[in-house]
Length: 354
Image 1 (cartoon, rainbow, N blue to C red):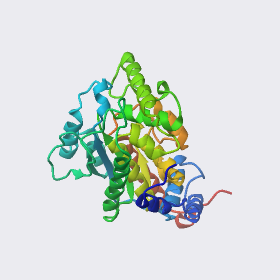
Image 2 (cartoon, rainbow, N blue to C red; image 1 turned 90 degrees about the vertical axis):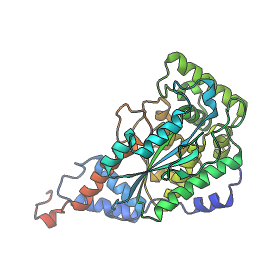
Image 3 (cartoon, rainbow, N blue to C red; image 1 turned 90 degrees about the horizontal axis):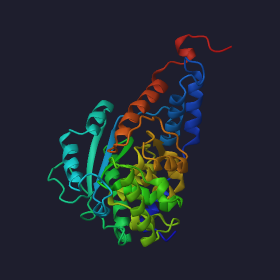
Image 4 (cartoon, one colour; image 1 turned 135 degrees about the vertical axis):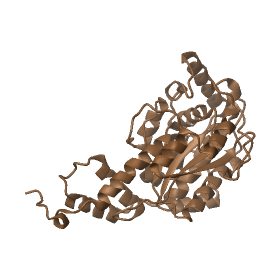
């Protein structure tokens, strides 16, 4: 891997493995609660994992935020999506107006939605849109790199800054989401490059391509990889050559949250590709990741396998936006409430297992 910029290298040095003592105390508490051991299944595992992540044996999450990072992609001109590129900006406006699926699900989960422009062509003028843009969409990576290496670094750093601002306001649970017509093509290219697998295994229908469209999309990804030859040993090279501005921003959000011991809930394929880049930059980041669901995109299974993550849900979803993360927030909240609010056998006056 090439030498990392000082600021990024400094942040990565702050990322540590989970707190074993906090996890051990959480496990001991689970054994004392009024239930047969293991009877709450993965809810118990979640509570123990979150204890290790946060360093608190009895974690609490009060300030929940889903970050939706948006950017356009030059590869759209290759016909990889059935939707026109202007839908990116239109959906950003919809997020800001509170009218998208993610807004409904975030309200259900009691989470705020933060929308950031990392490179939308003609973004809407709205006071709630966070300005993090690196450019007006990436270049068409079938003809050359999607962005420069300096731009790739800038996207990561701006993602770090975005999450840092929320951390100062008390953020304790991070959800990841994205918007960008063409970004499943970008995710497939990133995953193929990092895992060194052919596009036939990483490309899926995205927003609704038919079989012929998926085949064409796979050929586009293959052409991009041959044109740019991204180095799988250098995550920033992969990001620069076949990534997206919002993907780089997500890498920064993930790294910034992990450095401050905050759990990061992944959504689907695009956020998974960003997580793969983040883990390649700093392997301990993997311990801070929670997979919300298994996307219907075929390449997502490869990502989850590479990250060693087992998703909480499998609902056939492939919308993006952070919708899976919002659903997972409710499960995480339930796991932590049970861990925190259940009485122990001694407190409840209930006889324990003989």
